Amino acid sequence: DSDDFITREEICEVISKTLGYGKLADTDAFKNPFNDVLDTDDGFGYMAIANALDIVTMGEDGGFYPDREITNAEAAKIIFGIEAFKEK
Image (cartoon, rainbow, N blue to C red; front, top):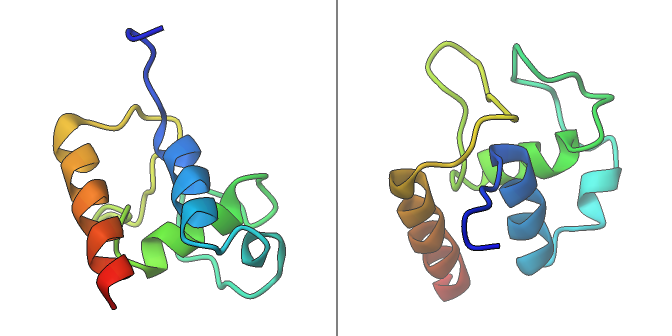
């Protein structure tokens, strides 16, 4: 449905898998920088990858807000970030 939204957590999984980091998300390779996500949460690895790549980042307050829908501005940043990463 074109009216469906995607959350910040969901887009992080898409990004991680698209860039070939899907398996890395299931490891203990990341320190948890977020104050609103547990490192035991299902999507933690994906969020850590997107944050580390500076594609979807946490707020200045340390929150990642995984359940918040992405905004148009965030979607544009994500597209730009993926393209920039692919060019490296």
